[in-house]
Each structure stands twice: as structure tokens, then as C-alpha cells.
Amino acid sequence: MPTAKRLATTKARILAAKTTRPRASLYTEELAKKAVSYFNKAQVPTISGLADHLGVCRETLYIWESDPERRPEFATLLRRIMTRQEARLIAGGLSGELNAQITKLMLAKHGYHSMDDTTHRGDASAPLTIQLAGSVAIANLSDEEASARYYAEVRQNRG
Image 1 (cartoon, helix red, strand yellow):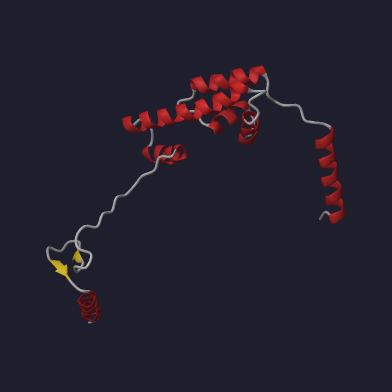
Image 2: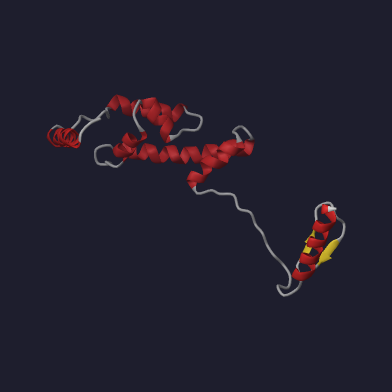
């Protein structure tokens, strides 16, 4: 197990290497062409799919995107990937070509979400109307009546 002194020395070497020798960027013109090729050929382009295609991490793509002065076309490409992804997910989801659950999950990244609308209507002071599944009777019960009926059924079911 490494000692604290050894860890500190290793950390100091790493920091010194970062400050004295900047690592050369993997970004080249050939890589940019490869990225455009992925964009044009992918059914539903993704940032992680592009990273895999280029052989880099997603974080590297975000670093390249964050420097638009050196790589303006790359920042634009990532925004276009998200736009095309959204459009193809909607079209594929509506046509049934793409899996509905995966489409729903991926569209959440674009701000889409499912919404369940539950609306309560009527007088808030009136007793609650409950319809039991499989029952044709509708019970208009106060809390006390509902509680009494529930406990009566529990006692009856116990035998």
C-alpha cells in the first residue's frame, strides 16, 4: 500500500508534468472529417456514439467544444448532433421505427417529458365519491363511515 509521502511525490510529478509539457491535442483535420462522416451516417447520432467513433472520451469532445476559437466547426457539429438526434427521435418514435421507451428516455435530454393530468372537480367540502374496481355501487362516505366500513370488512374477513 502506498504511503502518504509516496502519493504526495507522485501527485507533485503529475502536476509538474502538466505545467511544463502541455499534451498535444488529438484533434486533427482528419478527425474532423471522420466526425462529419459519423454525423451523416448515424441513424440517431449521439455524443457518446461520436466519441466512440473517434476513439476518444465524451469529456474530450466537450473540451474541444469549449474552445470555439480553435475549433469553431466542432462546436457547431455537436449542436447539430443534438438537433438531428431530437428530430430523428421524434420521427422514429411517431412512425414506430424506434423503440418507444428508449425514444422517451432520450427525448428527456431535449426537455420533453410525459405529463399525467389529474384534475379534481366538484365541491371541495362535499364528501369524497369512491368507486371501487369491479363494483357497481358508488359509496359517498364521510371519513368516519369509510373507516367504520373498512374495519367491519376486516373483522368479517378474519372469520
